[in-house]
Length: 249
Image 1 (cartoon, rainbow, N blue to C red):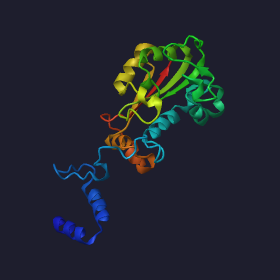
Image 2: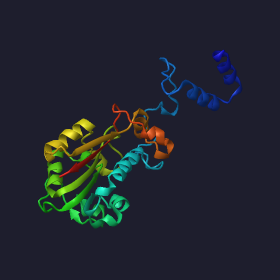
Image 3: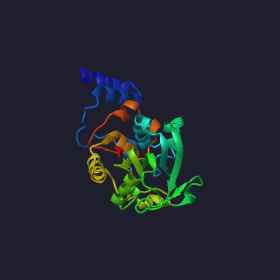
Image 4: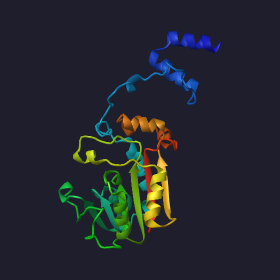
């Protein structure tokens, strides 16, 4: 009977509506047999966008970055250091922030830069300087990651908090010069081991984000608006596209 109804529906309904209803009827656990997978717009050798999705809207991984920072916004206070610019310091720190600093490798990257330094060797930054460091999507571009994390540890005040996000399953090069310097991908396991070795503390909280759909969407350069919240919020540890690390010194 079900087979007959499906056949009738296929004959009388527009293809797009029939496919939508068929997907709902089958449910998320349905696995199409070999040769029956419908690749549609994803059957391509180049992604839909090779600019991480910026040209379509907000990239998918930004949802997870902001979810992590929002959860830990109470730690963004006092003297805060952020890499690149101070957008997250302003958005999540607000009036909790007494002093905001911006670090860049080259001041020309941002005229508001207050600290020009290479985190792998930055003796010019005094130790125990910051109550919070916002370190998003940066460690992947630093080859000597241990030296960079050691610097972050040194310049944090005692009881200061580092909020870092690290790329997992992601596109490794775009059209910007700095994209070509992508060195590492991280998992919750590698991130946990790295930061615990340097900080020598059990107070290292690591959480990962992502699933196969958000991973494919990010790799294809789709925008955040093209996915639903329940699709973004579902977590599958086998498909980590972003790792968030909160460390207390």
